Image (cartoon, rainbow, N blue to C red; front, side):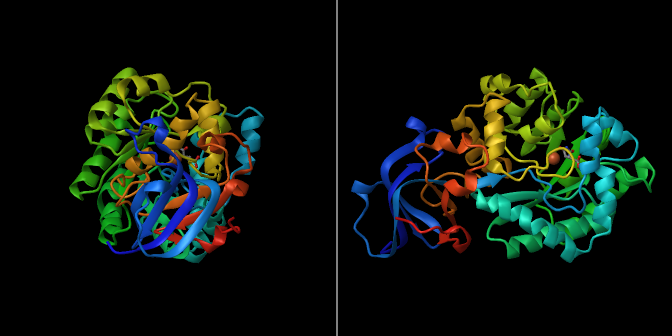
Length: 412
Ligand code: DI6
Ligand code: FE
């Protein structure tokens, strides 16, 4: 190593490494980047003397890993504001779903949209995530429920990766709900057969997801989807135990799931199974809040059994029309009782793990991809503190070592 491409000095660092002491905080630190990766990190006083192409003066700001939103449905058409009104007039979410609304309403609108429309609709949503420091976002299909529309959603997500200044990770969620135009068993066959074949043939999915619930796929149907995913060599994850305990978490853990998400109704047996499988618990306080749920996810059990917790927006038109990662962290603290540090780990290191990317990103460590965020805050917990001020706290976003022009705001 004979030079650095860029260094940041006059910064405090929050490394988010899981085993760090003092919350991984390094005051008056420095970080160097080369070839898009973190090449050196430590106290500024120890920075090696090396030629540097570009020096960034952080003026006392805090440098963190880029935020990772590991669960979104950001590609969709239409909105469900009418159902929002209905729910507030007393109609439950599951009743709306049972009479053909809910996810199926978004399916109608999404099927009617072409690829360009889906991309154009999702772009401003990603722009909001980006403005609050997101550098990696996961996007699911699941509002097509027929092969061509599912493929279109995933192609839109891949196209957004090329257009947006962030990484996009995709999940195939054909097992999200049942379409009106097919018998139930036929749809399960379609998802596990031709649909997954087409998705895999085009390399459109990084993982396979499902919704295991009374109003969606049963445990037995979910298991078939997971078997099909395994046959393709794709990792699985699951919307599990969101509205009732179907044993979804334990089922997903048996398949070595990357993550189980929602988990309000998960039992201790489910938590234990997740711990044994190394599955991440993704908590989604936006959906809990919007549906005015009362049952809290078993946060203390996750802690006791050593299940890492991630936090995500669940950005979707039905249960969580939320496009603010910082608000998701605030809600994880206020509604679910996470500490601010746990919430920050949940949008960095453990979100990376939930996507199977922990070797590549999610912490400030030498060798990892230089996805960074620079914040004008007094301490990291401040990112969980403000309501609706996040984009003003973000000074700079760095993607693979390159400062992103969109969010540069005159340092120093
Ligand atoms: N749970 C969710 O929170 C999203 N999907 C799911 O299975 C929301 C789906 C929707 O209501 O559109
Ligand atoms: Fe979801």
